[in-house]
Amino acid sequence: MKAKASWSDGQAMVAVFAGALCLNLSMRSVFFNFDGVACAIAVELSDFKHLVHGNHLAYGVAGWCFDRLWRLFGYRGQALLTLQTLDSVLGAAGAAVFASLLRRMGRGEREAVLGAAALCVTHAWWFWSLEAQVYMLGAFFVALAAREALSDKPRPALAGLWHAGAILGHVGHLMALPALAYMLTRKKGRGELLPYAISLIAAVSVPYLCAGLFAVQPSTLNELRLWLLGSAALTTNRSFLWHSVPLTHAIPSWLGMTLRIFTEFVGRQGFAWSAGVILAVLPILAAARGAVERSREAIFWLLWLAGYALLFIAWEPYTIVYRVTDLLALLALATLGLQALAPRWRLGVLIAWIAAAFAFNLTYVVRPAAEFSNNPDLVEAEWTRTSSPPEAWILANGRGAVYIPYFAGRRPVNLRYFTDEAALHARLDALAQAGEAVFVSGRTLEEEGLRAKLDRYGLKPAAAAGPLTMFRVIRGK
Image (cartoon, rainbow, N blue to C red; front, top):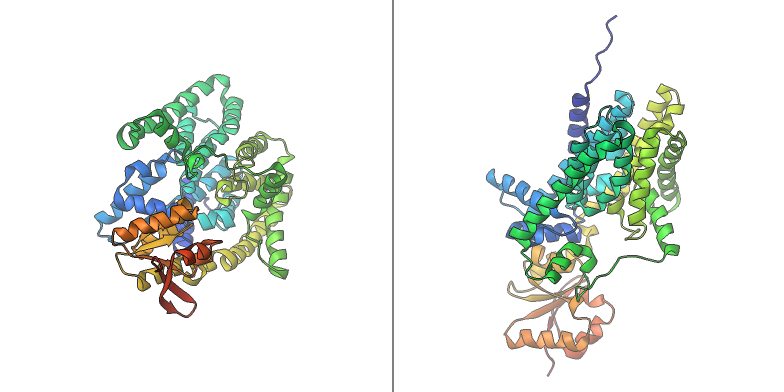
């Protein structure tokens, strides 16, 4: 009897990519995170000064190119959809690379495909493959770097190039360096670090130099500093601020997020909470079993996790998107741990976990994120569009600062910069003297202390529809 032909590495990658892309495109998220909307605004304006963000240089430019490609074929809609589609493509491509990576670790073709499928249905990977956000670009390239390092005959210069692509996606991916350097030296010797380093440094430096010269064009050292600091200089006075919390809170937050990247059990009750926790703990236990093997691959992934942990325990340990690439390490280690089981059991365990995680995250993460009514900021923006004049200014905070101009087509007054009552009143007076009308929604008025500040200035009801209200902000007599 003729043996069944196996898939080639390329065929497996194509199959995983196609399946993952269909999954990602089957439902659109309307969560619309702040950074994604802000990037869409910059893409539509071709505002390259803001597209080449100092912390994630390449994503905005890649998004602009992808959006322009759509428009060549007649697309006339918002750039936010094209950016979301780009992330869906990147998420699917990253999963395909992960399948190939598992094959290079010695996993069978079925295990490799199932391992990639498991990645696709995790909370963090699936959700952020649906949202416009910078991190999936870096995740794709760092997966390529890991795949190259784990090959039988790694090419250090190519590994450096892929790693550079990840860093250009987000500078946090610099933390993969210890793991990549370890694996390259174990397979090629220390001398091979030189081509890796040259490739990495050149491929990062040249784009930054070009972005600085042709897009940002800083005229002072302070402007250069602010650009390179990026998210670390987002205070109202643009001073440096490291986004940390005390270790007594940081470590529990980081550990909790290590579970939550698999399933979002926080906020669930009863059986749903228990099921979510169990589904999150199981791959961690399998990964721990794989880690004790002390193989080269296990050490590589442990160094990977340690490198990223060193940064993200200290910087926003509560932010899930920074933990997306931990899934590559944890699931790769989990497949190592499952080698203790018989082949049929391994496949059965993987299939069962994928089915359960898919059902859980679809029910509690993906479907809710696709519901318009579950995004109160979007509801508020739509209400603002229908209940205020087109030329109006709108008081906004949080996501409203980008939602109001993008979805409502109104000009925002960002309350983040007017926490002082006198400064807020002065801004309102300046707009009034210029003949501009200012409005605020009832929901925005719920911000602590704002209602009192505006009552003292002057509020006049303008529109109402059920729980939705809109007020004209006008100086009282």
